Length: 227
Image (cartoon, rainbow, N blue to C red; front, side, top):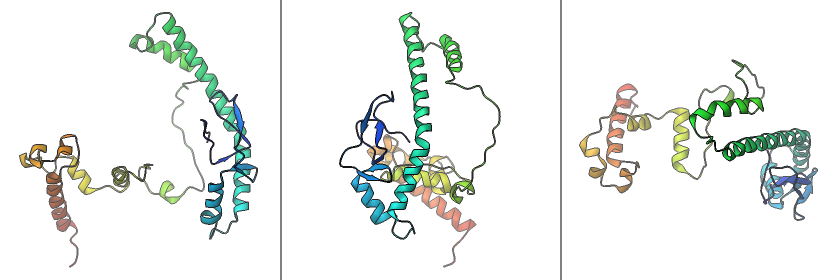
């Protein structure tokens, strides 16, 4: 992947782009370690040596050699894609600037066909080519064989993590809470709950309790646990 900005990526080639124009490059900081044809942040090198490689059967040297080879193989293609992106962005910027300078508002609905035609003309938008079939090897079973949504969420946000788990495995409690299978009674209103966050769309503990009672009763009826 590419990395832009003034902060160096933890592992980088000897030189790397710092702007989207691909014309400005700077050498990796002197504090970075030269490993496997890469310049690596000392902390990342330490993590690989002490935490990643032990028990894996691979040495840190082998790890960095493989990563360096991968970077060397993919970098030309990535840089070519970045240059293509810059070319398209320059054309898009010039097109919309020309519209605005001529007094045309590009956000108007009657201008959209012109904008869409331009984007197709420069190759930014491709023509739909119909159904596509692809196949991929060496994919983890969780992705290749288990049918479910694949979500990436920040692990330090408990609510996001919970929603991601629910989206994969499904949650009877979450489904009941969000729908009207359990009726929304007057006692479950935000005012009755007495919780300020409820009025802002937060969790309503009174409704939550009603949902838990309903779900537990349903589970006891359908799949009772032996006691």
